[in-house]
Length: 146
Ligand SMILES: [Zn+2]
Image (cartoon, rainbow, N blue to C red; front, side, top):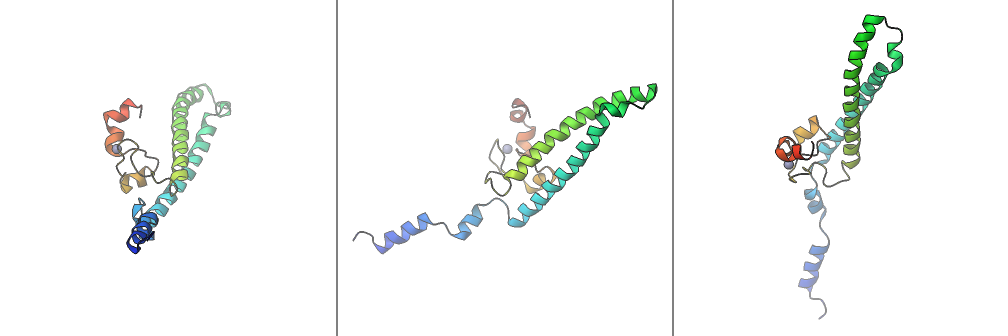
């Protein structure tokens, strides 16, 4: 006999994972994924508005019609705004990356350092997080410049 029924059964089991097997492998429920995706989209929209506002505040034209004192103030705040703008742009990049990965990258939601699941609470407040709290705050995180 080339293939016994027992072998066929075994072979079939090993080759085709059931729908439940596949569902069990995914990180989050569809609802969680949707909520998180919504959250990322909202954050991106909010950040884009922030960036737009900061770009206006840091433009050279913003200094033009000011008197001497206001101009001094504006120059000081400009450096603060420049820093905020840099941070906002970096975060936007990370959020867009998270949006690209969610639902398609099976490693999304897992810590890039230790491989543990990043808790959903953390992802909801910081969807761009690549590391769990321990790794993000630990020596390993600092060593790698995070
Ligand atoms: Zn970790």
